[in-house]
Image (cartoon, rainbow over all chains, first blue to last red):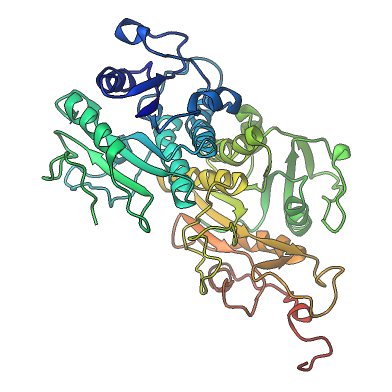
Length: 223
Length: 267
């Protein structure tokens, strides 16, 4: 499978690239000019996902897009940080999926975060049926902007989208690397029956407050 | 929160037609700070669309770029309420900046200035051309979640609305959101009797009046409350009952001549 991985310059993207490269033909992108270590030998092309001219060649010929950037985007250190954060999340996702749709890429996997639920009481068993409750800060709102944008591409039928919400990576209160990679692999292979939903949403949580008693894998729709 | 019966109101996007009719409706009871990206004399006049009135002191006109937080904040200072009617529809970067970031900036400024009532605006797109856009449904509630699809204008306004809701609920700001679809002149405009009309249509005059009711309404049941601002249309798709019930706003114009057979009889 030919897969574009965004956010490859970030921990989740790097993890995904390292694991998926054995079985797939990967093209990596991120905002950093270069990537180091094992990934430096891969096809890495820095890009601003908000710019269609930069995204179009990235998605050309791909079978799927792994949009991992929304989970843990690169820090913004200059200018109006909040404005930039929201714009990267929303417009970046919009342009990426629009270009993917135009290139007839049939599937996207979007990574988001369980941090959208931190304001709920710890007493609650949070699953995919709960409404995200970000705080009124750009950093918190941004992943919701990515999710909502991606959701509309699926709703309109332009491509199938799997949204995976991860906890903090490899911590005692989050998502293990194995579960994260396993969920990405399953999301790439998930069957979309048509007629049926073109949007699927899964919480991938290994431990901590957001566990529900349901194992994080295999990905199983909550219907 | 008490209703805003008088005082100072800042309108963002006052150079557009909705801003124009809002200013015209509010100018007698409120001191207005009208803001737009353009200077007043640079505004273009569009046929069949209202233009903002040239208001004298104590009203003010300020050039404000709604995508620039410091400018938005400065305009909000000293105000009792904020009204955001800014919009850009067709160009990628400005659409995200104005419709989403602009909404974020206005709410952030409301928090910083301690302003507790905001009127936010946006579209209820009725026919976006895909299953799930409600076009073939009836009895569509004001509270039916928007399904903007990938239409740039609809989606960016939708994202802005979500941001506004989060701010409202976290900071206890009463946000009244007006949704629109089609605007008409009060007489229906330069079209023939019986030529038909969209099931979500509003006269410019009624559009403006709604802002007065929005500012004066008692605290709504929810901090983020959405209202379809439509005339009383007979098709049964959309309704103004919620706006009548909670705001006391009743549209005066119903466009009967457009949805009845010409001459008043059946064909």
